[in-house]
Length: 352
Ligand SMILES: *Cc1c(COP(=O)(O)O)cnc(C)c1O
Image (cartoon, rainbow, N blue to C red; front, side, top):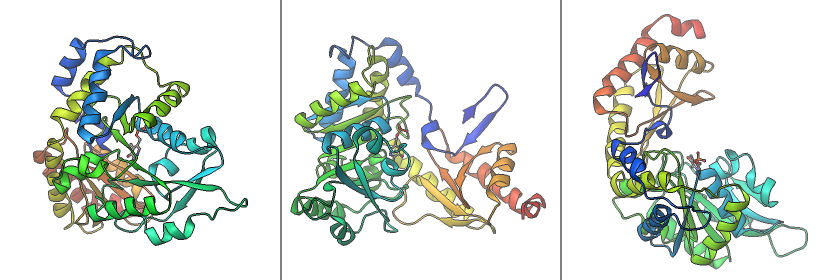
């Protein structure tokens, strides 16, 4: 539920709307803190160790957001005039204000994602630039897992690693929701992270922390990223207050993601019977449901659903519903009813 003074809403806009758990609030109020810019905040140190152990990397770095974490990674892997190969709709390319180009003069080479969220490695190969002064230097391949809620297959990750090694590319994972992928595949997250040179993980989405991401990689990589973080204004002082919640995100919240995926599957099934909503919830989906609606209908739908107590998000003619910790199975019927009422009501045709 998302509360305002006036009203409580069922909020399916994103898993970022999750509130810190009671345990997190308690941990935050009691957190041991220092000054993390001096490197002596014990709770930040503990978070970074926990993240590195969990993903089985040499080191990890705490950052205020996934955007800054991805940017630090790109800046650490690529020099000015180098390029990274990335999905056309990938968050790093599309949703981060072009930071890699602005801050690093790093050229993106966007390619269309395959329907399963992978990048076709033959297509990537065809887009790696030859060593020739006409071209930028291809340096990095960036994948996303989950990609729009879709889990990348494990054998694809192994292929991507071999591919990157074969072509002298580094491999970064925007793993904002990598724990959703791990839980869905029922593997420890290090089985995913071990294929990458660096992984960025959001703790403030389905894992409920109020703020925070971790970037994981080798010791040398993290030392480089640390300098970029400082330059980008991400050096925080008594950051242990936040890190204490982030530790619980890693240690207490991961298993809850299973329930979010189950709720999404049930919700998708129930919504599937509604005329007017064309549900897309494929086998490798996790906590996101997409539904195509009639052209131009989305703004009316969003407004009407809000009056019925349900917040939804969308773009173009597609609705996106995201299940998360603060959405319960007993709210599924309420959401389905709200959609049903909308599509049965005459207002719907007025949107035309
Ligand atoms: C949310 C998200 C990010 C960025 O995280 P912020 O903390 O919102 O900056 C990066 N990549 C993906 C795939 C995301 O969903």
